[in-house]
Length: 81
Image (cartoon, rainbow, N blue to C red):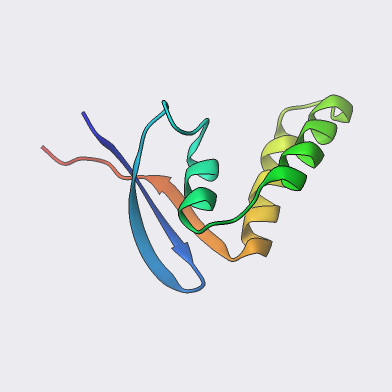
């Protein structure tokens, strides 16, 4: 079963194919599709994870940073049967 991720980047709706073989999660997949280097983001995310008391801080950081980069509505596409 092929997975797809839908997202909005700079007010343009897009859908890409997704594979866990290539990307760790859907956020990395959409950044790669748009050619965005996540090196600094991933280093900061790791620091947030080490200092945060709850996992919600990492999730919040990720969502805020991707919104700042111009992404919105990142989600897996559900297949209708």
